[in-house]
Length: 267
Image (cartoon, rainbow, N blue to C red):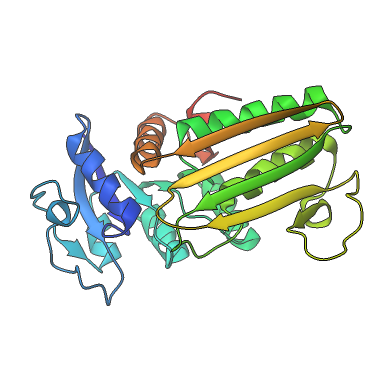
């Protein structure tokens, strides 16, 4: 059994991670962590997740929770850097699903991996979304620069960052294929008399509303035809199942910094 700790255990994703771990045959929930002021501290992580007692109380003590663990899954919105450093200190493999990581922290993750850590960091843990990344790359390569590209993403009304990390990665994939630069060539929304669309730009549009788990569409358009590649997530379980696959992958992997393309063998 892979002894696994969930950080952000009382959040939307954390609860589904807890539930999926408890249902698995090869992972064991040994720790559940939340922030120091969480109203869920001391409560059973399984009961909070709505799937029966797990025998693991939610704690704010990351160091104690990680003692003796094999792996940690972190989808929390805060304290990520400290949690990752603590996990590496304890020799735990790390699955990191937190979006909007800074360039500086991503560089630190690479340094930790070079020092012997095993880490999977991904914009999106969904198997389907990671296949979408591959398909978008292939479409960009085959269709070429004659096709205009627009990206739309929609999430629930509580999502704090925009655009989503997944949408950012989709644009980065296209930029990589075209030799473009994300910061220079991605245009976030349009308003007013902006003039005709330029050839060297990727339109990025974020929608928020209701309880949408995550919708992403990449549109390739040229005179006479349009190709749309869409992924829609209706349950957070798709991300949880991907995270568990990442834990299993790291259990047999060499030290390194990986993403879900590595986990799924899509490279």
